[in-house]
Amino acid sequence: MVCVMIHGVPETPSLWDPLVEQLDLPADQLIIPAWPGFVEPAPQGFSCTKEAYVEWLIELLEAQVARSGPVDLVGHDWGAMLCLRVAHLRPDLVRTWAALNACVVPGERWHQVGRLWHTPIIGELVNLCLRPWLARLLLPTLGMPKDMAKVLSAQMGRPMKHAILPLYRSAITVDDEWGEDLSNLPKRGLLIWGKQDPFMSLSKAKKFSIRWDVPLHVKRALGHWSLCENPRYVANQLRRHWKQN
Image 1 (cartoon, rainbow, N blue to C red):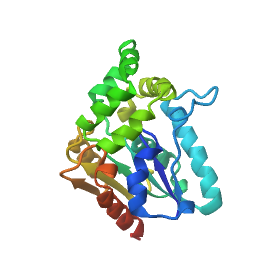
Image 2 (spheres, rainbow, N blue to C red):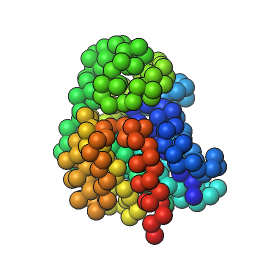
Image 3 (tube, rainbow, N blue to C red):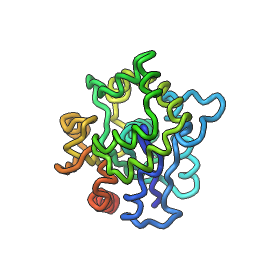
Image 4 (cartoon, rainbow, N blue to C red):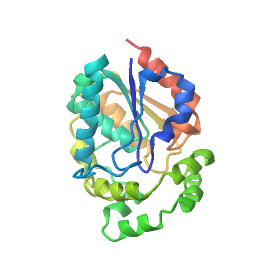
């Protein structure tokens, strides 16, 4: 078994550290890549659109599957949406999948921060104001543990800001584009949700769960960053999920 974990926005692989500690997997069974442009500058010619990131993840999984077979795919936030899209397009690459605090459902509206990034000039102003010191103060008010906010805010550099705008502006209608047909999703899927999430509503998760017959596990006390708010809970859910036939 190889587990591939895909972070969200504005995040880096560091977000997974508390969960990785709880899972205690061997190093050769865990892959946690950074999105192009989120830690290092994006490669020349890489567009940073949602389609470009889908292609990037497919290529990464193809290489891994050639070595060891289909993977256990886990995504958080934008990473969850990306994993859903890739699992639908290439179910042959995925043994199981799990989406944490994000999914795609037709007709849903983006959260407020997403709508700001969608908007020309306003999105640029938001990025201009997104300084590490401000993120370190702001993220805990949205539910991120203070220790993690300190780590991630220090990693929010210029490359990430340059990647965020083309990503979000390519994804204004992503719920309709990616959420209408997920009929190819591998059957072994799972949603993990924090009820206090200020970005992704529980009602959206319930709609997705019902439409695609996917188990939904909700923790009342958690928010958007469940994987580092209560990594033991998330680790236990993933272990059970992976062990199921």
